[in-house]
Image (tube, rainbow, N blue to C red; front, side, top):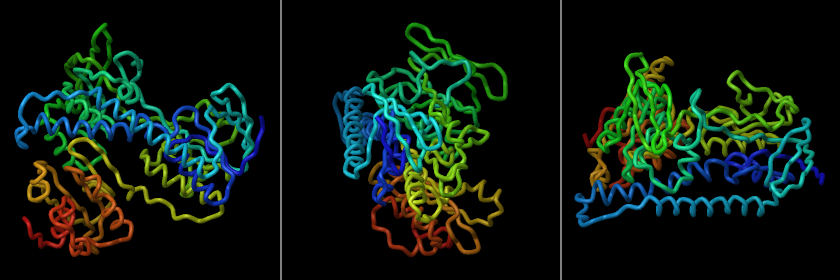
Length: 466
């Protein structure tokens, strides 16, 4: 079978399917090739199932760890399997939604593996055994990324990435998490809530090292209060599997005597590498950078003018919503429009552990290193009425503003539901609103969002509630 389309999209994740739909809206004839998961890692074994599990974990915490606070008494049993099955039901619903949207927009969707044979042709080995040769005028590569592993450590058995762990219905009684980025701390948070004994091993000197240092300290305190063991400045030196456990050999990053941690499972949460092999990219002429990611410009174009790349495979910022935004830019660019480029510094960053972490822009250290004259204001959620009412009054909102115009340079939040507060901050930073204007914007009471206004008042020096 042979056919021709205006635009080929390779990959049906949050970047690919959004790009395909946007291009179809602009009148293009579009085909998407997806070899495994419609909706990508995010919808199937990432963002979506973890949020379902985190909701179950939140309820589990409420009725166990905080039961007395809310007058809950008696024997309570928390079942991880029920939460796991609900997470898979949520996945099934949202992935069906992706397929419906593609069909609604008349996008050709092919289940199979695509391999480029030249800059305008791809051969698709369809999952039903047939082969389709697609010729295209333009293409968008959205193949994503795969989990990074440790040298000499084989994934399998009790050594897992997020994929194996999230597809396992049984709760591990003990879990070692290697790495404390978003994936590591979210899954640590989930399994600790259901009763697993969790130990996080981080090679750098603090948790969530991409966040501001004060956020890292607050998260470490919160995790230790929950019984999550935190080992920073510690490397995983090796792993041994026995019949019923895994032995994780650790060593201080600075050298010295190590230790062995025995657990039911080891989660490797060490970041991601681009997924670029097996697709025949060399046949297209598309160039990779020295890290193996596809090089793109602000309009998501590769060095081959009719081919764009988006999402994790570009290495710009590995977040689903960034991939979707890139997909829209690529579709519009290839359709002759001139979309505004993304400011990656202002992309919202959300980590859904308990407590949640939300941030945009520069950390305090980054702002100082880049030469900004800054004013920093931190408002504690212990002084926020809604946080007190929720019995979740730890955490804070911290704003970083330049001293000349009081414009937002960065924002760093940790506490209950703070990821939902990011749109206001992103809007303010994107459109150069000042912290004075944020402070004068009336926020409903009682809400966690009031802490944004209260922190903004602190930039101006007239905080009311502290």
